[in-house]
Every structure is written in structure tokens, then in C-alpha cells.
Amino acid sequence: MRELRLEPVPVSDDLRAALTTAGLLVDDLDGFDRSYFACVDNDGRVIGYSGIETCEDDAVLLRSIVVLPAYRLQGYGRQLVELTVAKTSPSADIYLATTDAAPFFNPIGFVSVQRDEVPSPILSTRQLSGLCPASATIMRLNRPPT
Ligand SMILES: CC(C)(COP(=O)(O)OP(=O)(O)OC[C@H]1O[C@@H](n2cnc3c(N)ncnc32)[C@H](O)[C@@H]1OP(=O)(O)O)[C@@H](O)C(=O)NCCC(=O)NCCS
Image 1 (spheres, rainbow, N blue to C red):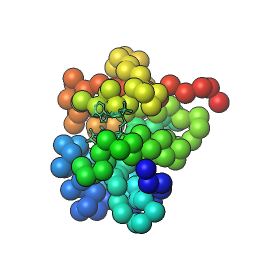
Image 2 (image 1 turned 45 degrees about the vertical axis):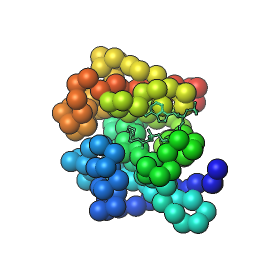
Image 3 (image 1 turned 45 degrees about the horizontal axis):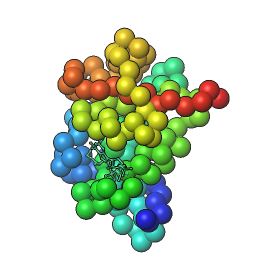
Image 4 (image 1 turned 90 degrees about the horizontal axis):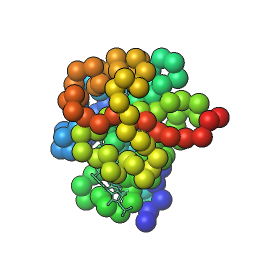
């Protein structure tokens, strides 16, 4: 498996195209509190993208996680998520919403939570408050207290 690294990227046509092809949201990409990364291998090839939306109260929404179709099912998705989590504050509470990839996030340490367990800064994001279907699974990263 190739070694991967994350490089900060602006919202670009390539990012939008990767997310659109994967069926992920693109209507709420812009915002001062959002950062995006290209996941790049040793040869400079872009394997995928990820994003972080930083909310109040040390809460973070992990978003825009995509591995380009040619590179899927080779372990890169897990690496991408772990590298992206490493970009957040160790004390942050990390959430995500997914319509169909909960079984992918489970072994990485994310557990499903009910909406009434989710802090309001996360529920207030555009993704959770409107764009994402109400049936989406909300997950929280279970990690040891700091
Ligand atoms: C979800 C996604 C990021 C996974 O990337 P990937 O590189 O294929 O994942 P990995 O190869 O690291 O897979 C790790 C494990 O998860 C499993 N897995 C991968 N995608 C899965 C999915 N959608 N549902 C359930 N399990 C999945 C793999 O089979 C593998 O299992 P194993 O360890 O038993 O072999 C990728 O399929 C993708 O970009 N999907 C479209 C966008 C999306 O759904 N993003 C997540 C919501 S934000």
C-alpha cells in the first residue's frame, strides 16, 4: 500500500467533481471554518479528499471524505480518515454524517449516535440542519479522554 499524506487545498473544481461523483454534498463547501485536504501518495497522485468543519465548543464535523473510485478497497479510505482526524485538536469531539458508509467508519472507532446526543454546534451545521437527509447516520469518534 502506498504511503499517503494530506495537503491543504482550496475548494476547487477537482474537489467538487470528486464529491459530486461520489454523491457527497457540495452546496456547503465554502466557509471560513472549513478546511480541505488532498490525500496524495509518494508519486504526487491524488488518491482522495477530506475536510474538517470546526464548530464551537471544540466540536468538529468530519466531512467530504472521498477516495477516488480507482483507489477504493485498498485501505486508503481508512488511512485518509486517520490522517484527517490527526489534523484536529486531540480534545475535539469528532462527528460525521453518512447515508451508507457507517460500516466503513465503525472499525475506525466511530459509533452511531442519536440526534439528541449530538451537541447543538454540530446539529447547526448546514449539513446536519438541512442538507443531509434526516435518515443519515450520525457518528461520533470514540477516543480515550485527553
Ligand atoms: C467510503 C470510502 C471513503 C471508503 O474508501 P476505501 O478506500 O474504499 O476504504 P478502505 O479500503 O480503507 O476500506 C476499509 C474497510 O472498509 C470497508 N468498506 C469500504 N467502503 C465501505 C462502505 N461504503 N461500506 C461498508 N464498508 C466499506 C472495506 O471493505 C474495508 O474492509 P476490510 O478492512 O474488512 O477489508 C469510499 O468508498 C468512498 O469514497 N465512498 C464514496 C464517498 C463516501 O461514501 N464517503 C463517506 C461519507 S462522508
